[in-house]
Image (cartoon, rainbow, N blue to C red; front, side):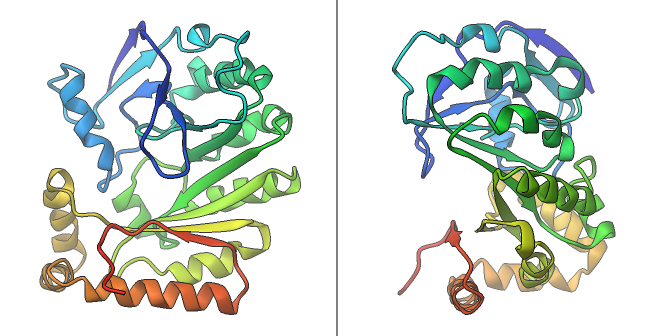
Length: 270
């Protein structure tokens, strides 16, 4: 892993993401090594020759770039972790995310944090001080062996569940972000059933086979079960699969009276 300390020119940037106004990414790159990582496109902006997942650029001046005497962000939603994980292992040393949270507190923002690390519990003391704070922890599987293949250096699913419990006990709004849903592999109902007592909301996102990740996903499928490659080819040529899956999710969530959002990458025919 190549680590490089850099000086960023800006840290709060506008975003086109749904349900967000601005994003903050304290790092460029991520140590979790997820095979399905959509953020690989970021590499072309870095000048790195290393593979995505083999380098981290550390924005050491990130917190210093946040002005605390401004009304620009009042009531705006700021998402931390759109193309990196703000609580990846390197955060233990640099604490950039924690420093950023301290600078954001006076700005009266709506805070959203996306992570797959239980390290976030370190900052519960700060998160409790935000009047509007949502923490989304992502899950792709509750199968330990499968998870290690999909996201080898992320927190294990049991540590994620433990983090959810602690956040919930601290009265911080928690979201279980079931992402990505991999056909035939992700048991999203099982994830819901094991987390519903301490999750305020569920978000669902299907696997988007970007050209940048398709090769890695198919290599993984070859190791798990080669027959899955044929199934995936069929699924991604026919939107009916995801249409039907979306119907199942909606019916399940309504039946169990769950708050939910669906962020599927397909054009629904309904």
